[in-house]
Image (cartoon, rainbow, N blue to C red; front, side):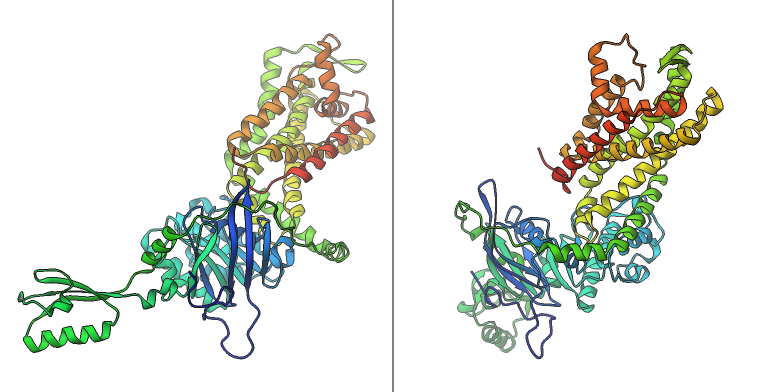
Length: 603
């Protein structure tokens, strides 16, 4: 059922009304998508004019989220044509991402940054951002400017979501159920913010389950059901709403009976009838009442609400046909040479964005006191505990013997780096992915490499800091010698290679983690046995079982422990240790590049 505009003709809205027709903000033709042989989208067509607020309505499972995520560039279509601001979102163009803003259902921001810091961090990603304070005022968060996100109410956090989408000064905004969970007052305030966006000339694609929201905000509405657009038009005309029979309700105070044709149903005293010509029938009814002196009470004229039409359309939508047997080929990718030139031209900006991100990640880390404390306290706690429990016995290291307390300074330094760069990085990314931060970043013009490298830089900095703290503690309480000269140079090289390699292992590990439910258990199940089998907690000697010695030689942990012992215990340096660590890091990086996902997988 198509009403009003044709399939690809936008409704009259806030777009330019004079002169030549401007290019469409969004144009969708024959869009199809299937999952596992089940057709989710079956030839979807619609268009959105510049400056228009367009509402896409549909029940859960109708395909609206899939359609919107294809427009946002988060999903690949199987067939059809999609143009967003003149570009194909399947090309994953950073230039297109700089022109759109996305408000997700998930919050997707760091809870330990303030409102202003969050917006400043995202503003640094865009080439021409709006002033941060201007955006804060626009969404009504001026009083919360310096408040941390974790202290905001649900409604305030949703406003911050809109602010994050606005700070890049986008031409097109995607608002995915922006007022879900709001109380009535907060919803009304959010509506005014969205109205303000239209006043700024922004194009808005809105998904919502609230019909009054679509009625108040939208210039144009499309209803999707069973993977198809079943109706489109303005909120007043969709589904022939404006031409449907009106219903007149009234009561007669003195008990008189109106003309039979106007009595309809009900009575005595209360009546209702349906009419195709409300003006004529109301004239007849009020004339009868005035001439006969019959007071009419509760007189009202209503037409089917948008919700009535929506329910009728979605309930009547026919089940779709089976998914097509073979998908249409994916959209073309821009030629490689221009893309390489753009990347070379943007290296300075890439570095700036990366270090800005790392700075804010580091700030959020130190504002989480429990995380920061235990990250730095665990290596020292283990050092003291193991040294106290096992006593100060002799441990053979290379061609000489050291005391166990001294041995544990080196091994706990290795543990500190592995924990920061492998365990913590994998778990943190798994949680950020679950909370929507990775998906939000994916919808911005930030290169993926800038986001991941910023997290790696932070983890390496924490790891190096932990080694410094552990070394200072060992020097003060256990008389450990600190490296100098050539030994120091070799140690620093091994430390950097090791930290980078374990970060790569952290990225590879999170690639296999479906969600946060498995993150901590799986990561510790991988790392903890290697720590025990590689001499971190219990020294490995020539008397250790041969299979343990074999495991220690194959995996990188033992080789990194050896590098730490070179610095602190005077053990001989081996380039093969550095080589094994580097090979593991390179292999892990290849796995991460191929398998890393920006959204959680459901199992």
